[in-house]
Length: 245
Image (cartoon, rainbow, N blue to C red; front, side, top):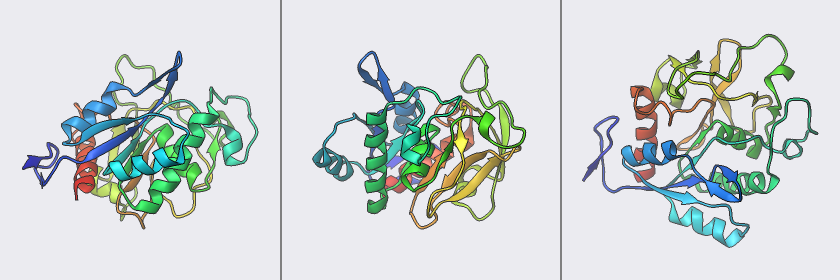
């Protein structure tokens, strides 16, 4: 029998977690090591899922894996959420965007658990018909600087408040200090989704789908806080436990 480090609850087998490729550098697809290690230390078997333009391969990914992790990365092509590029929009790759959005839409039909982080949360929202502020400067009102400049990515940046009666609150509590590495934010929230956490400036920090067994998106980077934060270990551990069920 295996045990999840976060809670001590036993799981019957190590679930296979598909880590969806983050992006490209010099024609190389990549996944940052922190995602792989967070899955591993939580009791899952990390499997990297590269971008392949094939419906059959997508179906095989969905059949192969017990759960899925969508990672951070660059911006999403604005046309995919009904907008044209505005000042502040960053680098995009529409092939990667379409691959991840298609995978997300098919995943939602299977009810298999997934955790989506930073860009991954934005992919989750767009796949459900939502939209994104292409830069925080385009969001009405004042806002925090959500792109921290700390030496280490595990350092905290600002406070979030988690809404009651959400699944996320069961894992991380009502308030928490998190890291922050994004210049975009969710605007219109997708169909079937609720906002489960916000920053003090009102920026959406987490979403979830209540009708799904485990479909959570967070704007911060829990994989970078895994070693220092019991709450992040609980979040990953609960995700892996659900994937093993």
